[in-house]
Image (tube, rainbow, N blue to C red; front, side, top):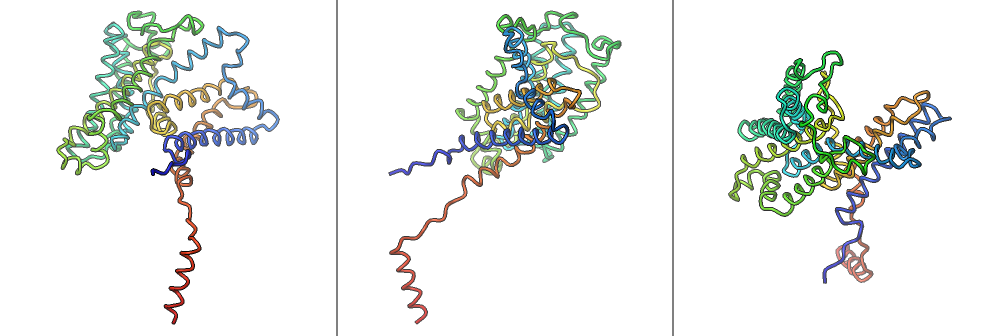
Length: 380
């Protein structure tokens, strides 16, 4: 008869428990930091961060508006985490997601502002740009044996400089404000179609980006766990030589994995910037979405649906910092809390190992007597 496994021995339960523990510890440590900064107002500050937009609970329309904005701002970090976990499941660490996200920004904004394309084609351009950037990294990994981390980091900076040069042009950049033009004003057809805007307090930034993000997560879940293609990708990641021996095209799978991961990162950029909720500014560092996606992926237990929950949580805490009283605290305290939670994510495997630590089985009395007798015989 098959022995029933303990509830806490289930991998999914352990992952959820470890992720929640990381989040709770991060919040507790964040509160301790607030106490060190200003003990008298620490509790007030933590309540402000955790309460976030729920401070508008007496004004339902305003509450729903800020909820909608939080969902929109969570889209890019969720999709970047989906891109990273997709590659990770195939045994690849796609640190180049930041660069693929950057070329997605470049493609979507340039086609919208400079070329005046419709939103669908701008979206498609971003996906193709991200896919090509990911494929380049995959090519170096598969055919030149260059570590994908090294190739990804180099491509991140190349993408940033190209993006700054192209979008810094007067056709895209409003030089008086040092940021790209508002798409809604220059090319209304480049804005993504709205989604339940009336429900979310007439929030003009609520678009189809939100449902598309959920659909992409579900597709990734199905592809990785229910298809032959997903099995091949994971098999190649676990052991490239064994996969090759089994008749799988290992090199092709490596390139395909990073191509798809790059496409998702490019999609993340387009779904965010084509809402016009934010304009691109000339940057001196690579956008942080690609790196934040790594933390969200691990906080979500490297599960496509878990990444959605983790992404919403991270964005919720991050935006909660804007409600801190600046007379007592720096709003970046919320970012520090997220950084601590991200750091604690590295202990997820440690927590799992503690839970899975085998218990010592006590020997029965009969077996103990038998061992004692054997020991006496040896001594004689």
